[in-house]
Image (cartoon, rainbow, N blue to C red; front, side):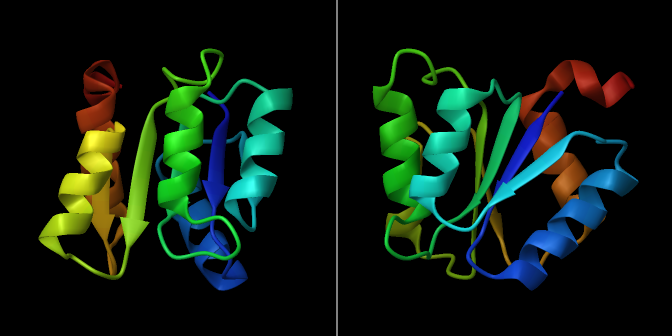
Length: 125
């Protein structure tokens, strides 16, 4: 299953990529902002998008809203990562259709748990 990691901080992309590899994901692409991610998503079908919230010029939240508004992308599982655990952000993301939410810092176990919550069938893998 192809995974798209979206973050404007290359170190964070590397960390998430390594964690995903530990969890058995091989097919991992990345994008440095929401616009680039959207372009990639329109050209390739992803089984999961893991996106940072705070990015310029297009935030992860804006990306999520764009993805959910696009009939071809609307069902793509989407996990949001943020350094802020503000309740209103979590509520806004949920309303926009996020599948799960991770607050930094996090580790492989947290990532695995959040991914398994989105894909219950994977928990047995």
